[in-house]
Amino acid sequence: MARPKKRKTFSGVQARGNTFSYRLRVPDPENPEKMKQIRYSGFPTAEEADRDRSEKRLELHKGTFHLPTNATIAEFFPECIDTHFLMNGKKQQSKDDYLSHLNAYILPRIGSMALKECKSLNMEKFLIELQKTGSRKGLPLSASTIEKVGIVLKIGFKQAFKHNLISSNPMDNVRIPKGQEKRVEHILDEDLLKIRQKWQELPLAPLFELALNTGARRGEILALRWSDFDTKTNTISISKTSYLSNGVLYENSPKSERSVREIEITQSQSQSLRTHSVRQAEQRLQSGSYWKNNDFIFTNEIGEPLKSAYLYHVWRKVLTASNAGHHHFHAIRHTHITSLLQAGVPAYVVARRAGDTVGTILNTYAHAVKQDDSHCAEVFEGKMVAL
Image (tube, rainbow, N blue to C red; front, side, top):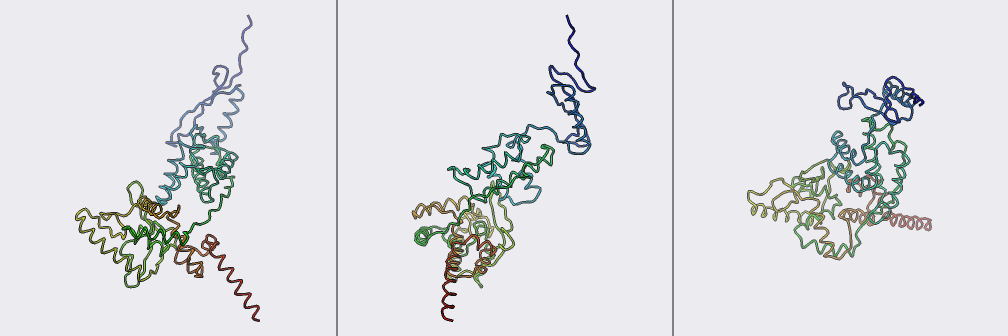
């Protein structure tokens, strides 16, 4: 009987059944001062195993070696996003916002994909498909949503590359597709009349009126304290924004430097706040020792700052009762800005009051500015005719 042919082997390369494997000493990711052994197996010949080992040793020498991992996006990204915002001192609201985009758009679709399988091509394909049919109703997503999804992917893969879990960042060569531009939503006059009639019946009427008369953002309104209200000059000072997450109140600087501003209010609006102050004082007496003396203008029944979720709940009840259709709370801000522009107030004045840039105002509210532009054309033509 013929003796089976002896297979050629190399030092350190082992035969395992019909395949070959080898062990490699690499730095321990949890303790770089120590070394650990990992096994690479499944090579059909000893030559291929030895060649792969030589390539890995060269990568170790050059500092380009990456540990093999079967970790998926779902396993790595959530903690990664959490760490990123913690290390960079970002706002809790931003972190929650990016985590919600991760949970809503990324994990349900590609969460099970292994990090090592993620390439530029399939990431770009994913974003394009998401942009086209990513909403709950299978409709296109907005530009801002697609942009945030892209940022989440960039953060996650950047950290994966940093920790040697992937050999390259698949998002480096990916162009974020442009989502559908979302037109700002302002409330029509007839609907606004019905809505105001309904909220006047509620204890939070001063909050809604202040939001409508100033165009302030929801977080800016909820962060207001009585010390921000100047009764002599009838002004509101906006210098912070509040956000409640998991029972913890976070107070941050506003959206941008321009958002720090002083807004003038009317005499009637000022009187509305004074009346609200009297009612709050009565409520404080009724609550006794349960009252939380935080100086917030808008609070619950024991002086605690209002939760944005509660405000949204009340807003939904107002809309239902007024039969005025669906509107986001932010539509109140859009209505204030649109009304000022349509009345001919210069964009730079509106931008200063809204805490935004002139460019953003002109781009976002082009539908309102267009009417003013038409008026300009008529005025100039009249001047030319008069020459």
